[in-house]
Image (tube, rainbow, N blue to C red; front, side):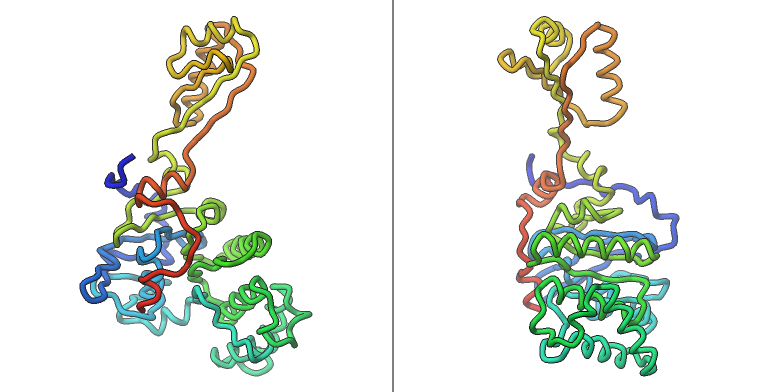
Length: 334
């Protein structure tokens, strides 16, 4: 598929729901480089939204704008019901941000990092200690609380990072590449933490280049390419944008295979006794296929369905395979 094909973003079914984050025509340039070229977002409260894109696509810039760290050049946005431009302080009070690079101070202990964050949120001393103890326990860091954070593993530092973000009890959390560099076990631990946060009513805005991560966690996904949203929707909606899905019917009885090959279009493999048909994998299409086989008195011994995955979608929309590196020109020039 040509990478020049652009997809119209799907209609957001959550558009009538209260928005935790919304944006219209958001724009940002650095010199003559356009990073965001008029993007629209609507993220319902209590959901996970994943922003995908190749290196330098503008993901981190979007997070920085929506978290008030940098100003947009154009467009409007509301976060937690507050206008980004005129109510930045109220926005900051409602959000938490975990960036690509850890905010943990390695020279002090995990507990001291937490207490420092409590002080920054101006919590009373007793309340700060209570919140710190509760979050350290929640993130399985109690036993390491009195150790310098420099001795923590990557996964432990990431858990501490998010625990620090939660000190202010934010209702919206921006996670910018939260699992980059983590081993698979630590990554799955982070996924579970995100699920628990959302179950508690928190909205999570996630940027990632791990497509499995978006597939596992996100209620809705947007693909950012050349400063624009090339497509957005659920994982299944995005997968249906890309052709290449098929159903494969396998037979052990040569007579049944020949009967199927005679009535079904598609690719016929005489050696493997298999028929492969183009399909979007939908329930309606599969039911129609099976009803047709039943009507013809044909029984397949094996049926497998292949649908394009998010990697196929990413490649089709951006012209490049997904990568797992977190560094980019866009992130380093800021």
